[in-house]
Image 1 (spheres, rainbow, N blue to C red):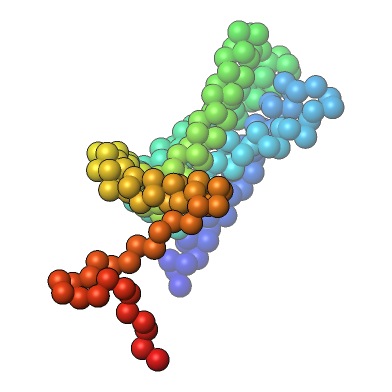
Image 2: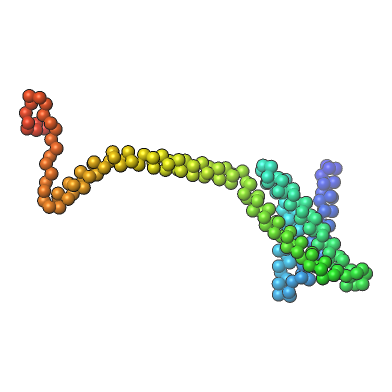
Length: 209
């Protein structure tokens, strides 16, 4: 019981502080966007606090295999650092505007914007990486690779046998084509009666009635 209460309290503390850092990060991002694009700032938070929550949940409940666990924990740390960096940048920006500290220089603002862009790109890449390293996806990829190799080997063997196959089939094909040509001119091919046995009759035997 005590452990559950402690877990609940620490979770509530972390969530409250994440809401605070998210609001500060949102304030900084909106300052870099035009008035008609402010809604985009909420989507950008998916690369900071949103990324922390997503990769934490994925690491605990969804990751399978070493690659997925590694991607999840690495991105969890990176997004956490990005969240703290964005929160710090907004704090310095607003404190500078209020004359408390020296405001951020344009070059420093540009550095934060570049870092934010890189963080978003990393999150997109990590999301793709989680799909590519899914064990089921890897199994399907390996199965498709095996199928491709089998087909390639079958085609190679068929190519090697093409001459003998052509020699085997060409007499029958040529005979069939010759019969079609004769039929066009009304020439009926002679029946291919079986050869009589020695001392037997040359006439074909009538079928039994």
